[in-house]
Length: 266
Image (cartoon, rainbow, N blue to C red; front, side):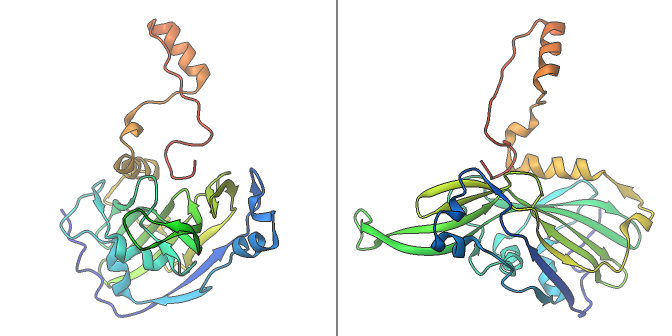
């Protein structure tokens, strides 16, 4: 068992660079339908470079002792400020889907700890009043333009001896249809090639001799299971499912979706 909560004692700051590519592909090209939409979704980082104190990264550490492979929940209000480097409208209060943020201790040595994490969040880009009022209140109905990434996956490498952050990265997985956009009642699925926060690493994780470690895939799966119970199902491609059905003489339960089940883009 290892206690990580008090390791960040060094006061050195870390410079983090933000990268945000424009929309490269879309289903309906909603972002191109009008000059207003083009301006709204022509996005770039709110702060291309920001310095973080070591205290900020305590948001990713567990409050109790952990072993390699353990997963813990992150405080949403403490991790969302990192996403405000992209846009001030960052929020962890999703209108739909699985909310939350979790981290996993992926590897540990005498000198280093490697943490993998996953965050679900979205961005409110603009708001405007709709005709009418909310039932039983005197509040206006509000419509919004929102940018909803599939997820953010990241890692944090810490030197346990010096209390220094050696590496930090947080990124939108770069697969097609990785963002939903909602433009005042209309929706589209789009592809953003790169949306990433990145520090310049001072230590290469590949050079570290870990005393205990799980694979990146095992850590990813452990985090996925915290969001989706159905991730426990052993899904098979159609060809493999047919072969297994013939072998076991069991029926096939087929699921057809427009996008992946295991993140927050449709």
